[in-house]
Image (cartoon, rainbow, N blue to C red; front, side, top):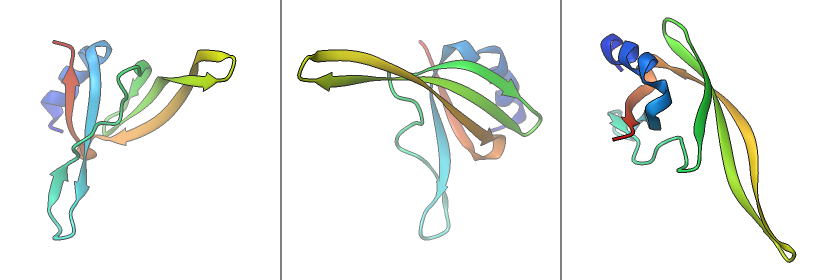
Length: 93
């Protein structure tokens, strides 16, 4: 991720819908991942940007099914991402 895009993302963190990272293929080439790190129900609760990394607190929601019914379970995930390993960010349209 370029520094300009990094700075733009800081201003639009609340509009983030998904984050795609790079991975290395078997032939040694850098490629963008096909699926993002966030699920459709996830949202970024907190972000702390540093010069070359970001700490994210993500509210992750899952539906829990049981015999008596279902309910929505919410938990926080904590991840740290390096700027160079982020391929792209998708924003709300």
